[in-house]
Structure formats: structure tokens, C-alpha cells
Length: 164
Image (cartoon, rainbow, N blue to C red; front, side, top):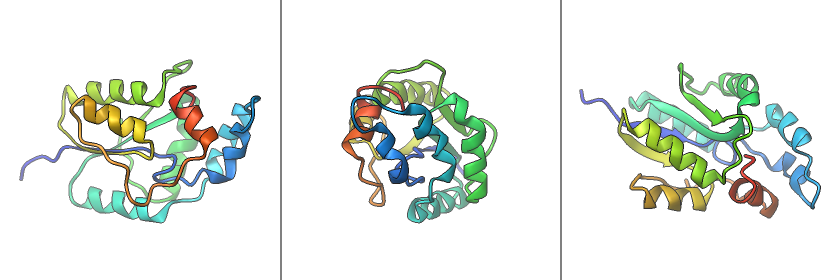
């Protein structure tokens, strides 16, 4: 059997419903601590979880590529495990401390690094800017049908502020 390429999956908006905490990003004074503190309570987007589980069953190695900061690693790994999502060593790629490039720039950089040793089969992300940047860099990517619509505050946090 031929080894499958990596399936890269964003978390917020693809697997985790973040609508309950987006209000912390509204307005000029964003409450980043409150926004990230509520991440452990994110409801699961069941359609995304089922798609990831099926891809793993089909032999695709799953890598979660998230703009969440590294300081949320334990919370995020616990969340993935609680929701019975496949997690293997090295499967969670997070934004390093004080890394504030726009999500598209950050994720293209990580995908290029991952692709230096493996083929990328696909990337699922809720951010059209990330998908477009990955296409421009020569990688497959898409916004899945079940992806959650982003609020303007959340989009700004990802695309301009580089905070998630």
C-alpha cells in the first residue's frame, strides 16, 4: 500500500465551534486572555470530527495546524482527546510564543516545512485567505462545507493581527 499524504486540519472553525468566545475580540480592546481561556469549552463541530476520523481510518496521517498559541498545547491536546480525535506525536502544530504573522503567512510557512519531508494531500481551513495563500504556494487546500462562518472580529484576529 502506498503511503498517504498528510491531511492538515485547522481546529478553530473546522473542528471547534468558537462562536461562544468571539465576543472577546469585538471592539478596539480585545480580551485575548478571556478568548483563549474559553477554548477548552469549545463545542465540537461534529461533521468535521467525523470527516477527520474517516480520513484517519482511510490511512491519512492527520496533522492539526492551528493558529492557537503554543501556551494552549495541553488544553488543545486534551480537547482533541476528549472528542476522540486522532492525535499522534507531532500531530499538533501551533503558533510559537510571540509569533504574530497573519494566519496565511504562518500556515504557509509551516506547510512548506512539513512538505519538505512528506506529501501534503490536503489542508482544511475556515479562512479563505489561508486557502488562497496555500494554493498560490502550490498546495492543495479548501474550506470544507461544514466550516463555521467567521465573525469580522475573528477574521481580523487571524488575517491582520496574527493572534489565532
